[in-house]
Structure formats: structure tokens, C-alpha cells
Image (tube, rainbow, N blue to C red; front, side):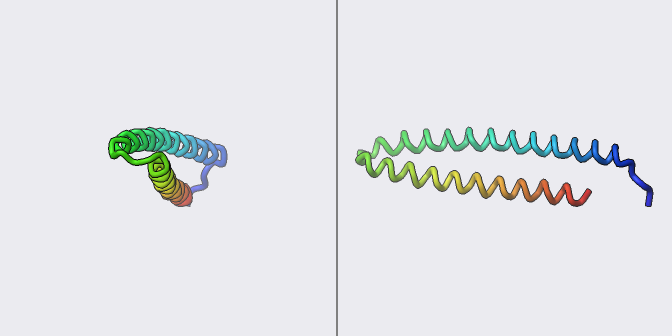
Length: 89
């Protein structure tokens, strides 16, 4: 097995981590846009149903909690995948 240059390995690791961070940032921006679109779309649709403010606020809270949970779950999967790829190197 050939020896690897420690500086080269450090540089590769840094580049990989930079790419992973950029990928995660892009995903975060996309998910945030999606969350905003969902909130906007669902809140506009619910207003037309003639429900009171308490019902609207309750629905918004539930929807935001679900969206946040989905985001966290997606982020954890992505972080795990990035860590797995890093460990394979």
C-alpha cells in the first residue's frame, strides 16, 4: 500500500469538507424557500375557509412544527451521508 502525503491528504479533506458545507448550505436554502412557500400557500388557502384566528394560528403552528421536523430529519440524513462518505476515504 502506497504512503500518502499528509499535506495532500489534509488538502483533500479540506476540499471535501468545503464541498460538503456548500452542498448543505444549498440544501438549507432550498428547504427554507420550500418552507416559506408552504407556509404562504397553506395560510392563504386556510383564510378562505372562514375559520377563526385561533384555528388559523393552531394550524400554522402545527404546519411549522411538521416542516421544521422534516427539515431536521433531512439535515440529519445529509450529515450522516456526508460523514459516511468522509469515513470511507
